Image (cartoon, rainbow, N blue to C red; front, side, top):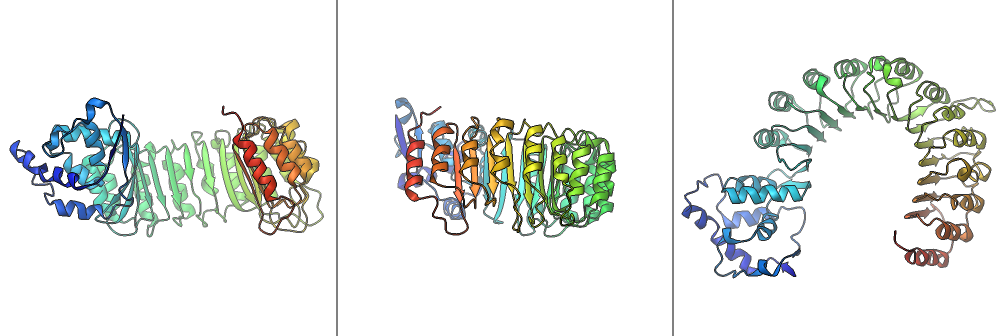
Length: 487
């Protein structure tokens, strides 16, 4: 049986007996806010509106006389619903009222394993991921724009002293916060400082010096660290499995020679000072064979891609945003070197400038022939005069990469329905994105919709006007997809 709970006057009457009942049980409630009006005033700060909540209950569960029922006589379903109206701080206070409240609030946290809570007193967003049924083992992400971060940490030292993951995004990192981290959180193995409003290298070094040996994941994004700080990181964090150094424009990568063979994922987006010297240092380290996921972007030259292709044979995921630097008319094409990465399952090639046509049919065919374990392929060509990728290469994709599940093609205007016919033979294809392919027509779209029976997402878009694909065809494709049998 379904019963609907709506906020109404009966809800208010329940709260009038709330603390009277507690006093009868001789419970010390001094730390609890007894003001009914204050509680509901705080609720006005909630990010989401209170909405009608539905629960499926047994008939025996709904024998409730709201006019005579005491608060603690309510069943667990009602408790879970009522506690959903409180914010995190209020719930932590209510949790100490009695054992029954403690039990039901803990159950509330178990059910909502991914909580996005608003501290109504500081207007800060707290994301808490409960990884197990034990409330004390969780991850904390603080996204803030004021100085109350330390107050949150102080509270968490009492509630969750065994935090294993701490993330600070748009937070001012000062000596007080760092001291709080070092003195109270001993089990942290994942640490993130992303886009801090203020942080110094000395504070980062202090944190790394303390947590370094136990860290498995470290994210230092947009922190303006230098090569000296990077050297401290890689030397003092030998057990890192994930390292994200994105948007640190001053690091050159010379310290990569000290990377350990525990590293699996390395992200270097928009690290514009990393050039051949930095990559040569990386491939000299033991991590060159342990890294399976690499993201690198900036003005990456063909020669830098050659270094990666020849020295990192175990890559499974390669995300590269690159710019062409070879002389016009040169026949050297280092993108063909990617074909040496035979274990690749995910490949994203995003070309910043297609003027020199760095990616062409010959290199793409070579990559597809060799990397036949690919499941994800993204080709994004920049603006330019020479577009050297055409149907000649993409029409062969089903012959070489039959396991493709996600395919994204951007800005290759030479592509026609011939390639779409080839895509329709990809039996595992689930996601297809076609952006600014002005030469594809209705027939190709219909074939894709009709023959790709596992397709769950088809995205076709253009920056300008396109009359080769009509609304009638799109409507027919939508209707076809609705009539497919559900797997």
